[in-house]
Amino acid sequence: MKFLSLILSNLKRKKLRTTLTILSIFVAFLLFGFLCALKEGLLAGVNMADADRLIIRNKITLILPLPKSYENRILNTPGVDAVASSSWFGGIYQDPKNFFATIPVDPETFLDLYKEIVLPKEQKDEWMRTRNGAIVGKTLVEKFGWKIGDTIPLTSPIWGQPANQSAWEFKIVGIFDSKKKAGDATSSLYFRWDYFDEGKQEERQKGQVGWYTVRVKNADDAAAIATKIDDQFANSPYETKTEAEGAFASSFAQQIGDIATIVMGVISAVFFTILLVAGNTMSQAVRERTEELGVLKAMGFTNGLVLFLVLIESCVIACLGGFVGLGVAWLIASLGNPVPDIIPSLHLPTRDVIIGACSALALGIIAGAVPALQAMRLQIATALRRN
Image 1 (cartoon, rainbow, N blue to C red):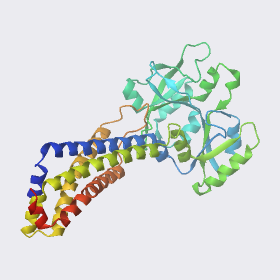
Image 2 (image 1 turned 90 degrees about the vertical axis):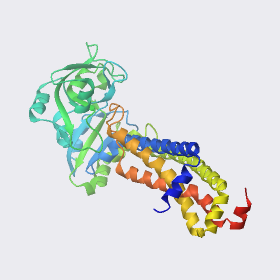
Image 3 (image 1 turned 180 degrees about the vertical axis):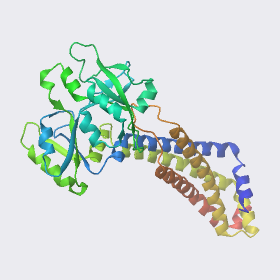
Image 4 (image 1 turned 30 degrees about the vertical axis):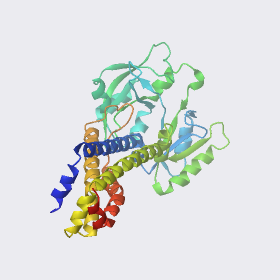
């Protein structure tokens, strides 16, 4: 701490250069925080997946359906505890920008399978009674100002309009919350599959679902049960692919691209650029203070102490910009998700904050390593001869 004033005075020597370097690092770590929060949001389904749940989809591709008649055969498979069907509706409310997850399900099996859904009993009972009833996550309710009893019209670019209607109309009979907070699962709307199937205009589309969710009795047997299910439907017109819920969510996210690889690629490019900027700044600072470094050594400062001072100066610049950038990213992410209909959640995990902080410190050490070594090897006579 006794050398702090010396370090600070060196940082203030070229205030504009130091400020611009810190701002560059700040922007880099702000971007790092945003990208980590984005990755966490896009992969929220993977993080929320249960080990005892499997997803069954068409073997060829997710967009091809499966027969509703498969449900009983799947339920009778040894080791299967429960099964529920789902489909992707892709609802739009009033404007194409208002797109959110809209999924037709069987209310009873759906709520039994997804225990994390919190829905009052009276609202559940009303959902069972109301043909066009729907339950809505609290995030959507807050966004659009809906309330129980409202009838909302939705359009679907996939399924078109229902028979004899200009739009699909749903009556809100329940507002649900979720026990899981790793990702915000309350930005979806669920409605009854029988109402959905009844409204399809094309007969060939009826009696079909998008995928099945299965709960197994023993999570350790999940792989074996998945094989049993797929073997049942092998060589049929609708062959299946059964995988863990986390793997299914990951493959769904991969339709956008390899999120983790994209994030790492962008972050690596940015960090490499910032490393060059910070390294150049420290190199210039050491060159400008060659004579002063010689004086310090003449006064008794050891080579190791000079090395330490230059490294600390570099780390102060990197950590100041990095920590503030991470803090601002965390603060913005904690204020709430501005696009819940696109990204299920937006928060910066503590794990990534720690990684970012360690990266800032590493950036300071690496950027200051070469200039520090040059300062350490500097000869007193050589330094004092230079103007």
